[in-house]
Amino acid sequence: MKKFHQLLLLFLSCVSLLCFVFYKHEYDRLRKVMEVLDMFGSTVTEEYTTSKQCLNRSMYIETDSWHRYSDGFYIYSAFKVSNEKDWSMNSVAVISRDSQSLALMKESLCALITGDAIEEKFEGIIEWKEISSNDVYFTYSLTCNVPEIRGDSHLFSLYDTKSNQLNFPLRLSNLVKKDKVSTLCAVSSQPLWKPNQLMKFINYYSTLGINNFYFYHQGVSDQIITNLNEFVDQSDGNVAIHLLTWNQPFSQSSIDLSLVQSECNLRHNTKAGPVITVHMGHYLVASGKSSIADFLKTFSKGPDWIHQANLTLESVCVNISNQGLIKSTKTQSTSAYMRLTDSGSLHANHQETLKIEPDSAKMFVFEPCYIHSMSSFDTGQGDPLFKRFSKLV
Image (cartoon, rainbow, N blue to C red; front, side):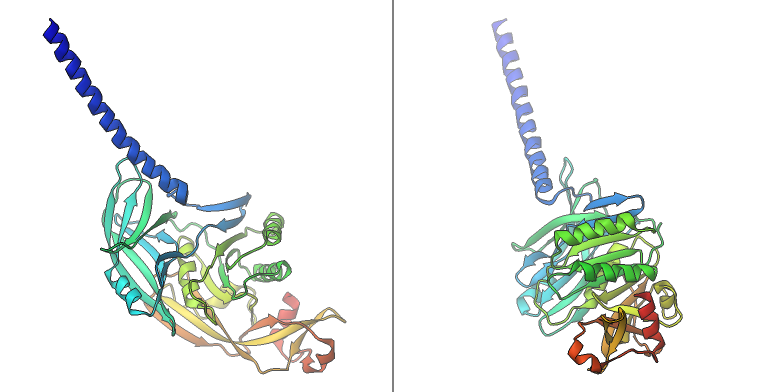
């Protein structure tokens, strides 16, 4: 009997030890998941935003920014855009022209990491497509195709065989194109925006039928956020405004609209309707067109095309004496650029540069009026597009 008790005690001790080891193993895995959530927030991000909802009107402060993969190599947010069995992750990258960064791009691998109870890593096939380049860097669209995935919570991972690795949350979007909206994406080289100028810009394009805005900024004030919340509350239509931090990884003299457009198309991908990308403060006016969508129909050749429009840019200011607009004749008209796609094409096979005649459409930009130089301005009464712009403003 004594030996039986000893054997029973030994058996219970072994079972207890095994239970403790199993518990410790699962606890460590859960702790890793909680550390990831604590650092990045929820990894399933259909609406990875801070938002204010009002009926169908909304204002979002997005949490995305450029992520450093290595020196001279940066990645923005990642999106799942495929509704097939396999997964397709899409992002944009900015890569320095130095040989080390370009070599790292060729050596990089991609994967999805699940954050469920049993952590798994699903490797994918990575594809790079050049968007544009200058003397300092290249810009690329990045696609990671993963043939099989399990679990509900995911991180996008970019890594190499050495020590470089970058993990960040993957946005899971609604894959059914439900809403038909007209989207405007705007970016500025100015570090700060003035509230009255921003609200004038939004009101103008809202009048032309834009109801979905993506603003890529370098910092916004509390006053701007307050004004935007008031705007969406008081808006008659369904308007969505998204604020995204555009902490550019490289200093540059001019904004790369093609990169902004590629990133914005990823966000618009689950919606139907046109997308245009412009510089902040550039006002488009078209002859005989009551909305942006009608104007784009004139040029769009379908979702497989990306168009870059070259328009005349003219300066105007407000005449304080009669509260009207006057045109500047101090300098010659310059060029303004606008990017446009139909329904946010992600993998357009065709690109086209359009030269739009100044009697069909123009861009206007505001500048200060100086009383002592009023002689260098005119009323623009002979310009039908200027008259239409004055009426809209």
